[in-house]
Amino acid sequence: MRFIILHKTNAHWEAGARPGPELIARVGSLLGELAAAGVLVSAEGLRPSCEGVRLRFSGGKRTVIKGPFDASHELPAGFTILRTQSIDEAIEWASRQAEALGDLEIDIRPVTEPWDIGLGQRPEGNPPHRYMVLRKASAATEAAAAPSPAQRTQLSRLIEEATRPGAHLVTEHVRPTARGRRYKNSRNGVSVVDGPFIETTELIGGYVVIAAPSLADAGRWAERYIVAVGAEEVDVLELEDIVTASSPTFR
Image (cartoon, rainbow, N blue to C red; front, side, top):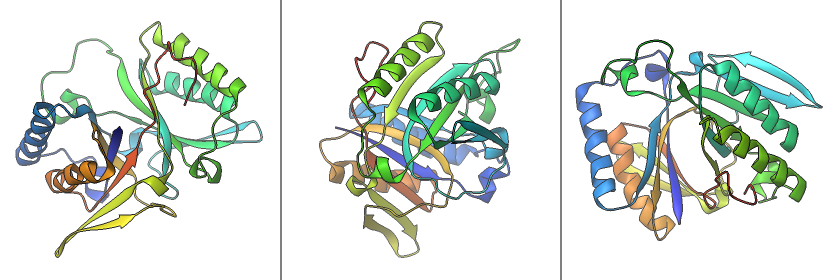
């Protein structure tokens, strides 16, 4: 089984602050332990929402809202990581995804690259950048409603098309929050709340995807993760099977 541990951002990081050496060392140390234990799948941080856009699709109409944006309904239904030359390319890809899925809300934010936080030099020229295309949960996705066969076919073809030039890196589907847990950091330690979650009103700051035999096992890593990243809250959610360009369906 695979789980995503999502930590929430705050005003400090939304203002564009860079992580200091101690935070980078703490997170790096934990990621090293996850890798040594053979459970680390991926890990990324996200840039402030002022560098992103929010897309709302309703009745076939697209509304583009430039960041920064307020947190409102931030429960994830799934996400894609793209590598493109501009956010405009990511917007067009997300729009084609919405053509298949129908009305929904999508946030697009740049993924933090090493040079964004002072680790190494930015490549010369105009290097491609990675973007998270985050699909928001709905009543249907929270009820575990699956895309129709026609939608799955259309989405699989879109993934295959974007994979050939190297734009599509990964697509993940998040299971309903009823299967997840929320961890909250306080002066009295870390408390745990079982899903489902009605909502979350904090934007995602970053995540780590791990392989674990159970939600409880993933939770033990989450308790260490919340301390390492200095977050007030993290969600642990189960992921569907990996989706690749060669997959027959989009899950």
